[in-house]
Length: 327
Image 1: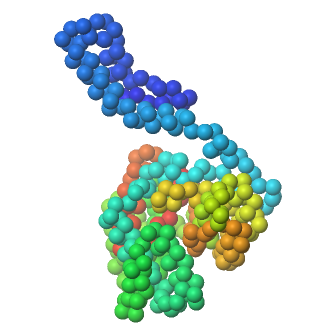
Image 2: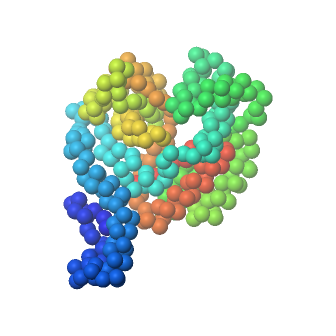
Image 3: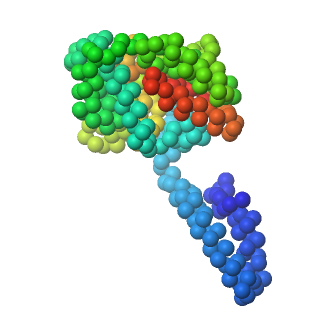
């Protein structure tokens, strides 16, 4: 029962605020009790002052920020995304914890080190001849992983245990589907650990979730070109056509910076990335991802449960990435 912003940006006073104001208008402020009520009103207003201020600031956002919505491509065979940028829908706000703490960052660096050792074992320690290693190093730098940690992971590849790639399928709360990518030296142990987590938190390991996703190439680029000039979404769509991409979306990275995601089929990933670079864009990362072809909406309760489940899965040392099909 607190103050908030209505559908048209109009502040709606809460029941408590209206009740206190009514008593003040009847003259309670002139008495001893009135002083107590005035203090209560001040506490109520100060409690909700920050959310109200934020709501007012959101109402004042320039309309130009949303002018790209509804823009469509002139090419008939090109699909432009109609989804809002990540961070502006309910699920993206719930499932991602903004500003990872030191502990979470340490886990991320440990997983990146594991991935580095795996690709070095497969293709060698030279990034110039090992494309996967060069891409992974680029992602590590984007996430501010120390250079010394990257070098240590490369040098330690020979002594590391051999790890194999594993893809696990599962169902989450509300009928959601999960794909879990892992690097593990013991597949049975990893599967057993994940199965226990799923069962205890409203999910289960099962086949069939894979059909809800398509494997695609994804190139992440900055929203500014090499010269530092901003690239508007309309221009990004034109560049996608020229580069041979299927789709482009505006989203947010882990640091809440806006970026563009160029999506293409798997065999075209390298060519699309090279074309985007030649067109003046600055790549952040590129790789293969599982993108949902069917999305579902969850209730608030199921969404909260799914968020907790994803956090527990991501905390597992062997887990590299989790994909979901939640809207």
